[in-house]
Image 1 (cartoon, rainbow, N blue to C red):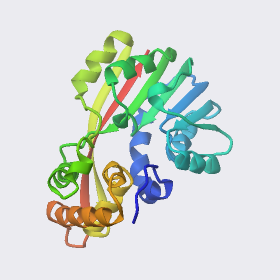
Image 2 (cartoon, rainbow, N blue to C red):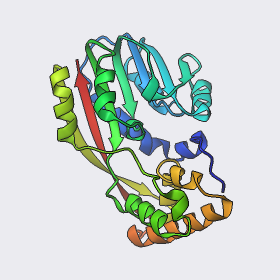
Image 3 (cartoon, helix red, strand yellow):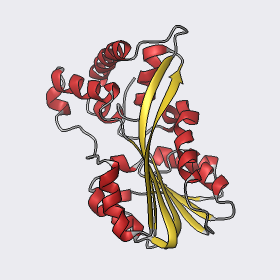
Image 4 (cartoon, helix red, strand yellow):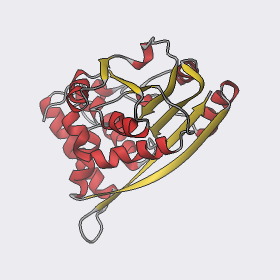
Length: 258
């Protein structure tokens, strides 16, 4: 396998049902209002946009993602909507939006102290910012990534490869409450049954957390990194009697209504 700096839609949707379930749970918690204009930030291959469209039928919906590969997949899947290649950190659409959805994407975007208030300002009165972010940096799958990166022969290449700073629920509530009429924050741990043992866990993270690490390595290094990661994952996530691995996956949810 070789890795590119692009997100690969095909890899991401290997676990589409599991990745889409949290956005359904997120949208179910958005206050019922008349949503006329909505946007899906970090729309990926369009699975979250499709869920959004089902939730707000008749709304004008657009989506954006930094990956041309993801945008191409989204356009093919949902040709009736507008999709653009764009960076969330520099996205300058004024709005106002009745609903801004950001499902499993803002963990990749820096400077949340500035970003979240700027998104709230794009909301119409009564509009909502709905955010879901993985909250799993302390889980074995992520801890092992950092340890292997720091102690392997590739350590000099991967120095500084890390995820955006994370905060807890209280931090986001304190940031958003002065700007919003209502802020709802909660955390859920999903337990995803993955057939295929350690290999399935590795395949899952190839579509997300592994990508920045693999992108900095050549082909042989990628193979060696993946093998070491797979061996460590096998120890950290032992299979059940039927060979299934139950992957715990904590996620943080925020619905901020202006």
